[in-house]
Length: 188
Image (tube, helix red, strand yellow):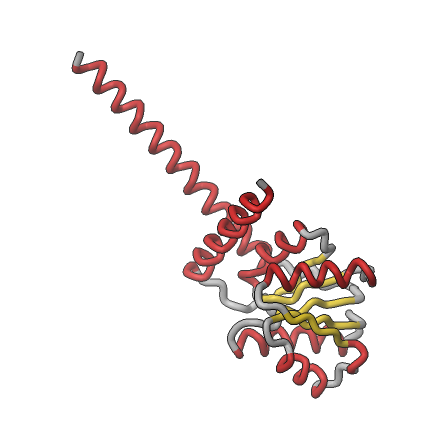
């Protein structure tokens, strides 16, 4: 009897270890995808940039700088500033030479609502091609959220030199899977 119980226990332990290995592989793969997407700049010619304006002051300044540079170098013709409080970013853009009629504002309390309102805006005036300007570590999740809403966005991280450290990648992997689980729960 003892060898049979030992075999059953060993089989259960192997299955648990195999499952943990697969979970670790999925998490590491997602982290790698976050880093790769965050280093990919898809900012070719586009007509619109969507500027995610929430976050700390340094990150917001980098996003505003990226949008301003794209606009002043004629890579984009309009900027949609999205966030909980997009007014400060709008003011900086205007002060740096972006024309007021080329700016649009979307104000909403969460990124999901912001993208929902962006989707509503795109149904009436669909851009030819649009860029999403955000922090490199956030790009994969935000593009996934946009894709789920039918928004044709491409990633334009703030800078290829922005540091993506292990802690922020781990946090973003958690946010990414929290979004996936929440969106799956909402669909069922």
